[in-house]
Length: 129
Image (cartoon, rainbow, N blue to C red; front, side):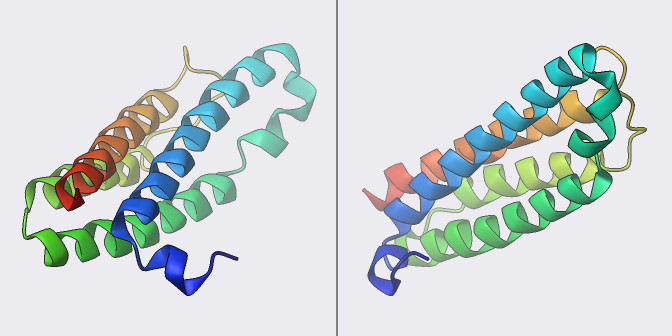
């Protein structure tokens, strides 16, 4: 568990959030590739609970990191961009979930949302300077 001193720096928290966003992209792409090769185990990787928990974590990190940054440096652009990314990710959960990137828009829209959210965290990190 990170120490309180680590979490007290918005820049460090944004870096952690960017890493988590990258892990989400890896998860989405790896899941699609693994499903194409190992369809028998596909249910484990595409369990909706994984995506719901991931979104909950992203919302918590986004609200804390981006909100705290906006309060500290006063710029709303990072918060706005990050919120858009979270919205795209949340919207992706409403799409049908099939196996593979080629078959469903959920994975594609999740990746787009994660990229937008990571951009918001990067803008927040830069604004905190």
